[in-house]
Length: 142
Image (tube, rainbow, N blue to C red):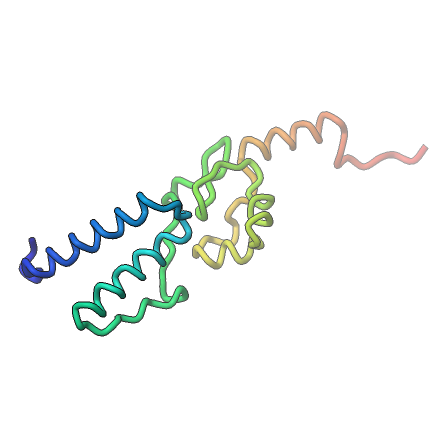
């Protein structure tokens, strides 16, 4: 217990936890609905205790943290999405699937404008294939 928490506050939080756990265990609640359920239980308990309901912070005020540190998001074989931590050779395809453009992604996370959208080894492999097939060379007129 911290200096700012009284025994009563600790007891109320424990009761909230117990009630929410009981509700979640007895019903099928989707993960997306869990914050709303906790909020509803808190509001009911607050109204019963005579407290005024506290407004939840708007979603715009919430700060999203990257799934991995930016420095560890680039590996030789794949790029790790800062959105959800998944591994991708082509990050641009993943971004389009989640509704972001590369520029939006770069601006959202404060990345440098030369941040790669393709894994370095995959890019080198595709370059080798192109060179071996003669792509990019000027053709002589016959």
